[in-house]
Every structure is written in structure tokens, then in C-alpha cells.
Length: 210
Image 1 (cartoon, one colour):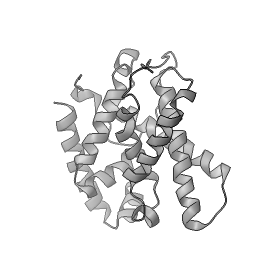
Image 2 (image 1 turned 120 degrees about the horizontal axis):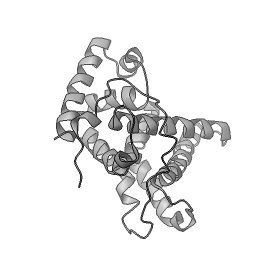
Image 3 (image 1 turned 135 degrees about the horizontal axis):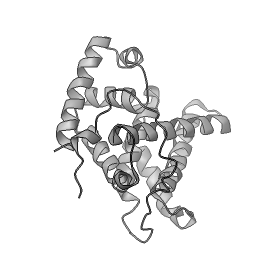
């Protein structure tokens, strides 16, 4: 397994930097029987940023992701993409449908296509922030060859952080919220949140840059 270099994990603020337009994507091995399982941590990280706090206690992110993964496994023969980026987009679509389904069940509402499309766009933006956070100042095609593996390493590393640090980092660096917004959500002062993120990022750099 390739190791990340310290410079590849250098962003200290949310980024929506566009990908290299000349880069065509990372090919995947669709015959790999474990290919979907490799992206479970990635989906779990995204789901935790989008699950409303009101129903997180009723259905954990892991349970939701398990349901999405089961559907993906059952429908994988319908996937027509050839690159990692296409696979991630397909998995996000499945995750969005499950997130919205839970929301409808708890609020007894009808399906809202516009909400699904909006959430899908938000998850895509979060996914781009993850990539930019990992790649630093603009990924090259050769760097992107290992980016999928790095995304999984980051997902797993954030899961190992203390809960408050992990939540602050997800909300700020992955969901793109301002420091004051993160502080309001988790019920702490902006100074406390800044401290949580500083310690969490220091730990992540140590783990991912070694």
C-alpha cells in the first residue's frame, strides 16, 4: 500500500478546487470481488456529514451505509462506468436515495426529487473537498492513480479520532462549514472548535504522512 507524502495533506481550509481538465480518471478493476467494500469508509464519512442530528440516534451512519452497500452489491451488474470517479458518483447516488428515504420515513413526507438532486450535489462537493484536502495544490494524473486509496486511508483515520475532533473536521473540511457554523452545531465556542481541529489535523498528518 503506497504511503502519502506530508505535502499531499496540506490544506487548512475547505476547498472546492476544480480537478485537472486533462485528467481522464482512474481505471478500476470491475472483476475485483472486493471493489465495493473498499469504499465503505468513504460512504460512511460522507453519510455522517449529511445525516440530520435529529435522526442520527435512530439510525447510525454505519447502518445506513450497510443498506446502501447491500443495494450497490445487488445492482453492481448495472454499473456501466469504467473509472473510480464514475463508481464514486454511482455510490453517492445510492447513498443519497437512502438518506432521503430515511428522512421521508421519519417525517412522513413524499419523495422530493429536488432535495435528492441538491443532496447529491452537496455530496459531490464534499467528495471534491476530500480530494483537494488530500492532493494539496492540485493533483496530477500520477498522483490521482493512488487517490482512491488515500481517500480510504483518510476515512479510516478520521474514524479513529476522538468523536468531537472527527465531527469538527468533517463539518469544516469536508462539508465546508465555517468555523462559527461548526461551533453552533456541536455546541462549543469557536476557540474550542479551532483547538479540536488543530489537534485532529495534527494527528491526521502524523498518521497519513508517515
